[in-house]
Length: 402
Image (cartoon, rainbow, N blue to C red; front, side, top):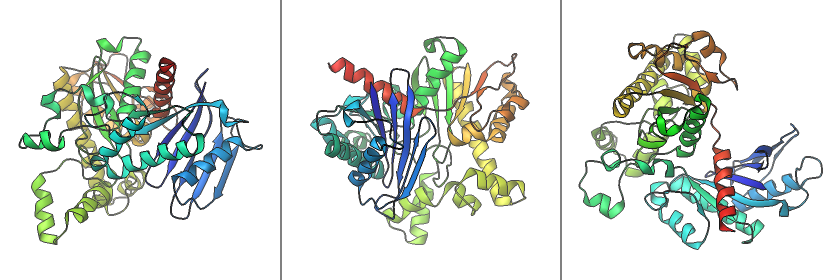
């Protein structure tokens, strides 16, 4: 069974074609700058690359580029669209409607659409991706949606409720939903496998650190708390997002600067975080480099990030009643060993011991356990693989439906 995995953004569409017989990636790529000037890149599992500037006015036109690349005689990997058995989609927001992956039908599409207010850019883009696939493949090829929020649906009320009047939960479903659930699910399960233990017997804290970041407490394979909230704005500071802050900061700045709700939303989501503090970049690599050269604001941004990671790990350790493993994943988590070292050395009071040599080696695709044999907690660097989770869920649901 070959499954096409689609991850549609507001102006992009990433994809992977996975052969589920051995879970190998036959091809992957990205349609970038959809609706702007357009750029398409495609790489096969054997390393063949194809890249072109091309206008893609919408996601349907972008999907035509994907289809043509997969079928191309020179760099294609299939000879007929019929070889694609199913399509799996990542959907950021499933709200309280979806606690598990679903086969796409009219009801599911309507549900995703109804949740657009909770994730305006993401859910709208996912729907465009689903409809683009329908235009090209028709209704005979099954599509499955895997929700980023689903893994977090096991959180208890005390963790997901906000202390605002209860009527807003009843009226508008205002609560904590979390994000990056597909990533947290994969790395927590992978960690248990690597430890040779049943995940039901483990307490794991997973740190998905990238341009968007979240930290999750997993007890026995179930989420008990996560740092992102109603939207991906909550939690630790990120590339351009504030992370958690006193709500009065929002009203205070809005009043002083005479900002509309929309303008305030842009400030909090796109002008804050690393970019806002450092004044240099939203990219951790740029900020870290500037900090090493003595830039004080860049150093402050790094210090804030590491401090906030430490606070969440410490608080989730208390929530779990101790942890068996701490996992670092995603772009920053997998590659910035200095952040991992800073956090882990400050956890030494708990018996956490990190192997500094291994920690510095495990970057750029190298991964593994970075704790010492006598550490009370196993520390792991594990590359995330959201696409594989989506493909596995798609395969299971499609086979079950038959």
